[in-house]
View 1: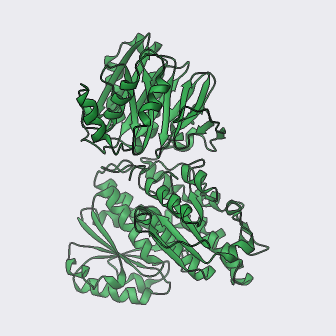
View 2 (view 1 turned 90 degrees about the horizontal axis):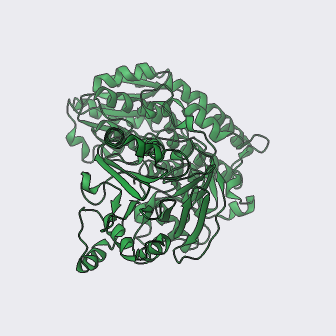
View 3 (view 1 turned 90 degrees about the vertical axis):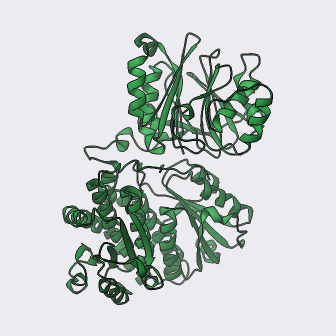
Length: 615
């Protein structure tokens, strides 16, 4: 869950590395560090805090001529796993002789045993990290001073766990060695330069030509290209892919925060998600990435939806989609639990793994378990070339564009729309009539404009948020399709404002949680004019009887529903299927303004990272 950048080329390595870290800071931001080589010497700097602290340190304290001349280096921005965020635990970590520096993303599960073995041989450790153990282990095998590749392969052969690493050695100043198992590494191929990163956003400013490493790949990286091997030092080949977005897409573009920009981008993101995927003539969706014939789709007997966090909430909505539109039994699995509870999977099951990054460690493990048990597995991902996309081989890209804010917004709404279109496709291959299919296609086409109308209420929602910005507890309630939306709304609020927020099925409120309601515990009630509204209104009455303030998401024009609330936020009328989508956009805006008024770090909330690549 950290950001890795490496560089070999003709540009100033320090500038490239610092710039790359700034683009990757959403992946980890409790500390940062850099190591560069020049004329056989290594300069290393580490600091606690954001990348700007590291940049200030380097450009202030390092010799300007050294900075101008250095052409090789590695850098890292950290999200702590082992050891607190203090300077000695920041990366790069170095070996005992100080000849090798390494940046690492992942967890070395057997680091204690390795550490004890190395300590018995005289190694002294200076950090609390598992990563330093791997750096020392590489140094232990680096005996002849000229074969860094062999040393890295030998060390990784002793390792249990996950890693994405980039390694440099003082006496090999024209190359890096990189490797991955479970943590992403991508190589950017430029003109007389190669950029290494854990995410393409650090590469796209330099080149759109990339190689995604597979598990157990090792590469020797030079300015003139890369040499691909596996962990056994056997040559392998990997195809070159193209990044399908430009660097400007990962900039704030005048917005105060990436999250607000990405909320406002949702109409266009949803248009991109829809583009080319509706067949009005057949009243269905075009899901070419599944590569299944109608007969094969009709043969599927169950859908299993897997995800974590926001993607889990998308899966919960997807369960309703598949059961209501396709008459398919659907189960939702928390991906982190999937492989540990020995799930019952059959050959006619379709397992759908949902992950914005396509790198979520728990979801990737669930993919592998489902494949091992014989299911057909598909991915729903936003990042082209991501591990889940490559390992499933089937699925759908969101095409929502890069999402930099840690709290997911446009990826979530695009996930809902993709799952809706998938359910429509399966439904039309089964019992869903053409007439109903046409109506659903029309509704899908209207969604971007409906979301724009929600965004047009930004100022109104900001005023409502101001009335609740000092709350310390918040309940969110909904029924049916709006129950997962309530969970997602609560998650957004707690992620970026640090308010304790809980989402509940509205019927569950009186089975315990209602005991916590009082005049300083507001409730967000999802009262869209869809089936279940009247029952939820009754639950709102129960809340008001306990003097809890109520904010309601209501359908535009539904004044009767609005009267039950202290404050009402209108959203456009939709069917029950897409009510969660427009409601969630309103709750994203609400959470944003609450966090802004509280002075919180909205794009980089404490303790969180964008892509969870460790278990």
